[in-house]
Structure formats: structure tokens, C-alpha cells
Length: 191
Image (cartoon, rainbow, N blue to C red; front, side):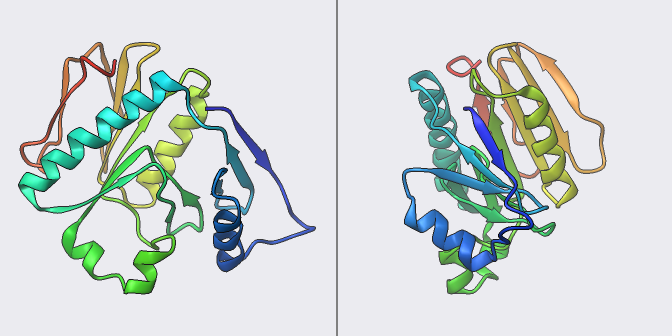
């Protein structure tokens, strides 16, 4: 997806409530906000990218229904990270106890919580460097496990807390490891 970053400073500083209202007033546009307050406007993905993203979410959701260990989120969910950024991974998962610790008001708006697990799926127009920076931001904010799936290069980058990034060429599946016990993502439809 093509993203445009707009620096509103010093003309305008979007508060959390103002950013939330901007997103609510423009539901046809997907926004993110960087830690420095820049507004990121993202275009929708094409058919192939949307199909791949749906496959990821379905597989993660089906596993979660069986395991009943947490909550799954789509790319439409915007999370308020500890560094102040508002980000929307393509798929995310949060342990049930952490989600339940939020108030109902926090759960309704942009939850002020970093997911335990995220997936970013590179679309044909995504800049790989930008996605890698986003993955590092997730990890710096407390994500435990993250996958950057790059169908164009048939690669997957695995991000883990406290470990260097691992890059795999043309893997056939990915394991949720100890965090998502029993979750295995078949990559045949995705990569």
C-alpha cells in the first residue's frame, strides 16, 4: 500500500482524542500516527494483498478459537503504543488477561496496549525499509513475536524480543512458538 506522511507540526498537534475523531470522521481512509505526531495516510491494498491478509487473519482466528488464549485483531485496529505512535499491523494478537485488564472505554477506542504478536504483510507498493522500521518500532515497544512476510521476495523475517532478526527464504510454514502454542501458518497461499 502506498503511504503518505504529513507533518502537521507546528501548525497543528493532534491530541489522542482529535486523532480518534479524525479517524471516525473519515472511515474510508486508514490513518496511522508516528511517535513524533506525523500523520500517515495509507491507501487500500489490491485484491491479491487483501486475499493474503484475509488468509492470515482467518488462520490466526481459527487457531485462537480453539486455543482460547487471547484476542485477534485485523488491520483496521489501531493500537496506541507506549512511545505515542498509533499503529495498525495487518494482524495482531493479545493475551486474554492483558486485554481484559483494559477498561471498556480503552477497548472501544484505540487500545493503549502493544500487541503480543503482530504480522506485517508486504504489499506490492510497500517500501521494505519502512516496514522493517515499523517492525523495530513494535519490538521496541514490547511486541514479543513479529513476522514480516514478504511475498515479493519469498522471504519472512522473524522478530523476537532480545534476539536478532532471522530471515528465511521461501519457508513453507511458520510456528507461533511458545507464545502461540500449536499455531502453524501454512505459507503456500501467502508467499
